[in-house]
Image (cartoon, rainbow, N blue to C red; front, side, top):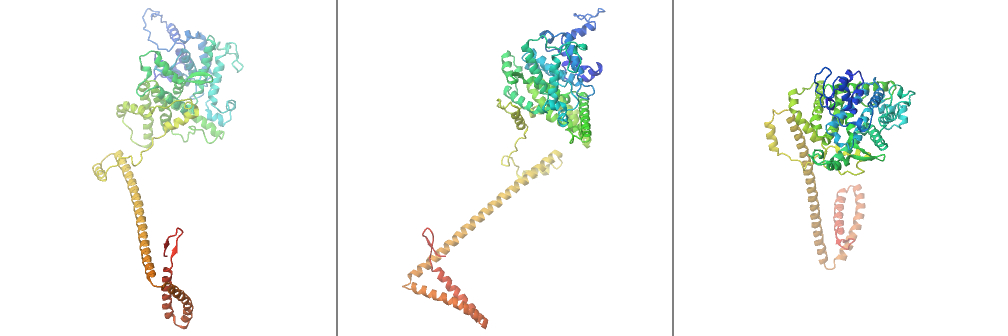
Length: 595
């Protein structure tokens, strides 16, 4: 029963059982209830709860998902041999990726299934397949991640073409181990039967069951690659939003399986020619990244182990001149508090908030723990910076409200149209970028602005407000200054436009007056009796005389008569202007005007 609890301490179990926690946890979960009955017999407890000494011992109710041993005809020794082989394939020297992590992932997945996740499985075969994938999802892990494998050009990266290198290796080793009989070679020159005996837990399954098991098993292990995280979250958001209405959950209904069946169809996807339950794959991925959501002191110990392994990788990269170092691997520049705050906010919390849409019990069982752990790292960051830390009592009072706010903030938005293109890999990444994008800010026309008088009055009344109010006043003041600047620019543009219009109208009026005056002069010239030819001849003579007098004026100025020449020049200019004004000019459209 304790194995189904979210706060189960696998680290304590690893110490108590002699560093073989995967054998004990796997035997208790996959072998239930036969494993519990065998343990009771070893303790001297009979079927009716009677001890050998005659005392009655009340057996506690033990929760299990399915009797896999009876369902698939698996011998208990074969299951134990399989678990021992998997545990021995984990490197104990790894600070994080060892058999204890595999046992923790298995127990965490089991807890999620007991909280309500088992309703997403359509058969016991799917439950058995996803639990076995949790057992094997990191077997043979070398303690160096995919980035190191690719950058160092390791044999594994060459074999698997730099694509999900370790995940492909885990799946291949596990699939190979599943098919080993007791007298077969394990690929390393050793007979499996010499130490472990028969390992094939699928031996008595039907061929169709074996194929379905291997497809789900292999795909679940491959989906633990962290580079697929955002694609998985985006796809699952699309599926959840298309199947669940806001504030309701189909699995809470009391109807028959017809409602659940229609709902569960959303979570199946055809991959490699088979229909795969993507909800179960997502549960395993959530269990794999769940350490920051565990109760204290588990989450701090897992953090220490994870960073220790990453720092060891960074040290090796530095020795091998694989620069720059892989992310989170530089022990000189990585801040523990910042790393955990970012990991929770951007990876773990969105994952479990999405899980709360699928499994309602997550809201009460897991999210409060996750928020408390986040505040723990944030408070450590404040202490590091010398800032005041929130009181524990205030944290306890605000805990429930904080969880509700987080759920609402991280909830899936409006319904998303789900089609084949939406659920493909690349489009899901684009969808994730769209979901995570910050909301568009309102324009200035949509914002409500306070009158100047009210704002000044509020400033005078709130001089003793706290830092938040001061910050908001400064923010409003900056916004108001921007608005005033915009208004001044608009006013300036309006003034320039009016000036341009006035100038244009004044020029038009001036041109009209000149045109009228020229028209009057023309009319007067027409009223003369035959004087027009004489005036033209006279003007031509005067023009000729102006030219000669100008030349003579220059000579006269040399003789000292410059004063007289100036008078003659002024007179000749006046006569020239009168001559020009008397000549009409024809425009292209036939209109007449005087220049």
